[in-house]
Length: 72
Image (tube, rainbow, N blue to C red; front, side, top):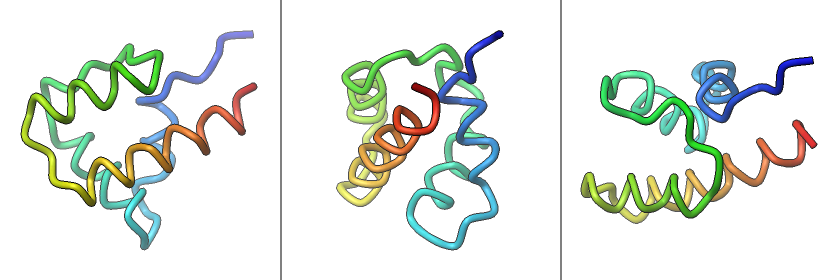
């Protein structure tokens, strides 16, 4: 069975009315977002390099934790 990628996990979160939903909308609008992100460090590095705000980084940490809990 093919494992759900973090990017595809975020696609399913885009309608949430919380910071994770906001992050999902931003990521889906970002054409250069790496769709194969496989670890939290890689995700945060990308967001830091693109100038993401504190709130986006916090939402990313929460989203990645939720992703790991639902896919492991």
